[in-house]
Image 1 (cartoon, rainbow, N blue to C red):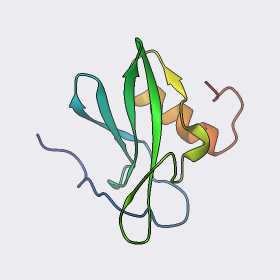
Image 2 (tube, one colour):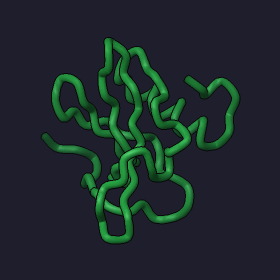
Image 3 (spheres, rainbow, N blue to C red):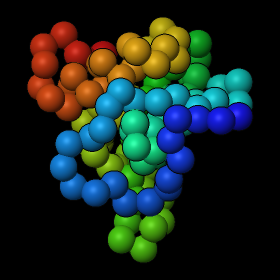
Image 4 (tube, one colour):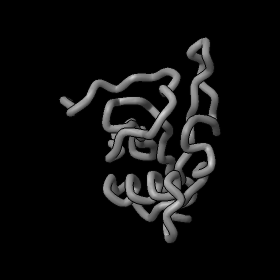
Length: 103
Protein backbone atom coordinates (compact mmCIF):
# COMPACT_ATOMS: atom_id res chain seq x y z
CA UNK A 1 0.00 0.00 0.00
CA UNK A 2 1.39 3.43 -0.96
CA UNK A 3 0.90 6.38 1.38
CA UNK A 4 1.44 10.13 0.78
CA UNK A 5 4.03 10.04 3.60
CA UNK A 6 6.63 7.71 5.07
CA UNK A 7 5.46 6.44 8.48
CA UNK A 8 8.03 7.05 11.23
CA UNK A 9 8.17 5.69 14.76
CA UNK A 10 10.20 7.78 17.20
CA UNK A 11 10.21 11.03 19.14
CA UNK A 12 8.05 13.76 17.58
CA UNK A 13 9.93 17.05 17.16
CA UNK A 14 8.64 19.96 19.25
CA UNK A 15 6.22 22.38 17.64
CA UNK A 16 2.82 22.14 16.00
CA UNK A 17 1.69 18.80 14.62
CA UNK A 18 1.40 18.62 10.85
CA UNK A 19 -2.17 17.96 9.85
CA UNK A 20 -4.34 16.53 8.64
CA UNK A 21 -3.73 13.35 10.59
CA UNK A 22 -3.50 10.16 8.54
CA UNK A 23 -4.91 6.74 9.42
CA UNK A 24 -3.17 3.49 8.53
CA UNK A 25 -5.06 0.24 9.17
CA UNK A 26 -3.10 -2.30 11.23
CA UNK A 27 -5.85 -4.91 11.56
CA UNK A 28 -9.65 -4.99 11.94
CA UNK A 29 -9.51 -3.48 15.44
CA UNK A 30 -6.48 -1.15 15.29
CA UNK A 31 -5.68 1.86 13.11
CA UNK A 32 -2.39 3.75 13.50
CA UNK A 33 -2.61 7.56 13.64
CA UNK A 34 0.19 9.57 11.99
CA UNK A 35 0.82 13.26 11.33
CA UNK A 36 0.81 14.48 7.73
CA UNK A 37 4.61 14.15 7.78
CA UNK A 38 4.43 10.55 8.99
CA UNK A 39 5.14 10.77 12.74
CA UNK A 40 3.26 8.13 14.73
CA UNK A 41 1.22 9.83 17.49
CA UNK A 42 -1.10 7.01 18.53
CA UNK A 43 -3.70 4.49 17.48
CA UNK A 44 -7.42 4.00 17.35
CA UNK A 45 -8.44 0.75 19.02
CA UNK A 46 -11.90 -0.74 18.90
CA UNK A 47 -12.93 -1.44 22.51
CA UNK A 48 -16.44 -2.73 23.16
CA UNK A 49 -17.76 -1.38 19.86
CA UNK A 50 -16.25 2.10 20.39
CA UNK A 51 -13.07 3.37 18.75
CA UNK A 52 -10.76 4.94 21.36
CA UNK A 53 -7.68 7.01 20.67
CA UNK A 54 -4.59 5.72 22.43
CA UNK A 55 -1.83 8.32 22.55
CA UNK A 56 1.73 7.14 21.92
CA UNK A 57 4.97 8.89 22.66
CA UNK A 58 8.58 7.86 22.31
CA UNK A 59 11.45 8.36 24.74
CA UNK A 60 14.82 9.78 23.82
CA UNK A 61 16.03 6.20 23.34
CA UNK A 62 13.23 5.58 20.83
CA UNK A 63 11.25 3.30 23.18
CA UNK A 64 7.47 3.45 23.01
CA UNK A 65 5.65 5.26 25.83
CA UNK A 66 1.91 4.42 25.75
CA UNK A 67 -0.34 7.26 26.89
CA UNK A 68 2.33 9.89 26.18
CA UNK A 69 3.36 12.08 23.26
CA UNK A 70 1.93 15.28 21.83
CA UNK A 71 -1.68 14.06 22.08
CA UNK A 72 -1.50 12.78 25.67
CA UNK A 73 -4.47 14.89 26.78
CA UNK A 74 -6.64 13.27 24.10
CA UNK A 75 -5.85 9.70 25.29
CA UNK A 76 -9.12 7.67 25.35
CA UNK A 77 -11.08 10.17 23.22
CA UNK A 78 -13.92 8.10 21.72
CA UNK A 79 -15.03 7.94 18.09
CA UNK A 80 -17.92 6.13 16.41
CA UNK A 81 -15.70 5.06 13.50
CA UNK A 82 -12.12 5.53 12.30
CA UNK A 83 -12.98 8.46 10.02
CA UNK A 84 -9.79 10.35 9.11
CA UNK A 85 -11.43 13.76 8.75
CA UNK A 86 -13.27 13.55 12.09
CA UNK A 87 -10.28 12.06 13.94
CA UNK A 88 -7.98 14.77 12.61
CA UNK A 89 -10.41 17.61 13.33
CA UNK A 90 -11.19 16.50 16.87
CA UNK A 91 -7.67 15.53 17.95
CA UNK A 92 -5.95 18.55 16.45
CA UNK A 93 -8.85 20.82 17.49
CA UNK A 94 -8.54 19.64 21.10
CA UNK A 95 -4.79 20.25 20.93
CA UNK A 96 -5.48 23.80 19.75
CA UNK A 97 -8.09 24.29 22.48
CA UNK A 98 -11.05 24.65 20.11
CA UNK A 99 -14.46 24.22 21.70
CA UNK A 100 -16.52 21.19 20.74
CA UNK A 101 -13.45 19.04 20.18
CA UNK A 102 -13.87 16.86 23.29
CA UNK A 103 -15.07 13.30 23.43
